[in-house]
Image 1 (cartoon, helix red, strand yellow):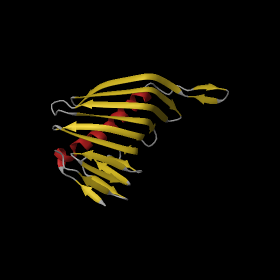
Image 2: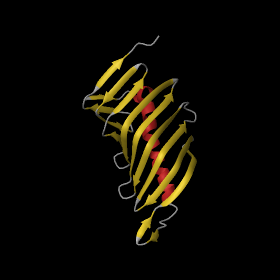
Image 3: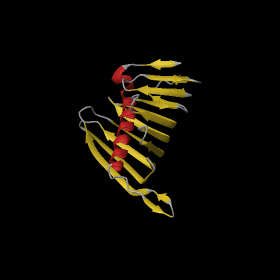
Image 4: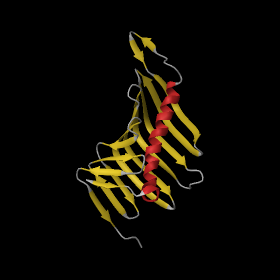
Length: 186
């Protein structure tokens, strides 16, 4: 198992991923605030669908933008496809962006799950890239877990793990076929 916690400087950009999950949660709450509109046809529930969604918010001075071509709500779940989430950090410099092929929020557990995630984060004149097949953000645990692995590229280093967890304090733990490589940059 590899575990690291080097504060905001080294892993601060990873906190952006955790914050992105929180923003996705807020986006879904906006959709739920529309109320439970259920239409029935032939005894079956028809999902409420919102197309071409663009949400822009300022939270704690940071500017967030979320785009999705389609969000659907039915039976306590909101699903989205082709999600694009971006944030610009005010006063701190930098920002983050990630894309997910699909996202799901379950109202009962308050969990937000993304599939096929690719993203980039920049902070303190450094840029890092991340990729994961799946990410799960659980507000109660205040962490993002990567049950099917995670890959991070930062400053010439590549870290991979079969599973991983990122906590709000910036601590990243990887286990299950963990590997790392470092290439000196010119």
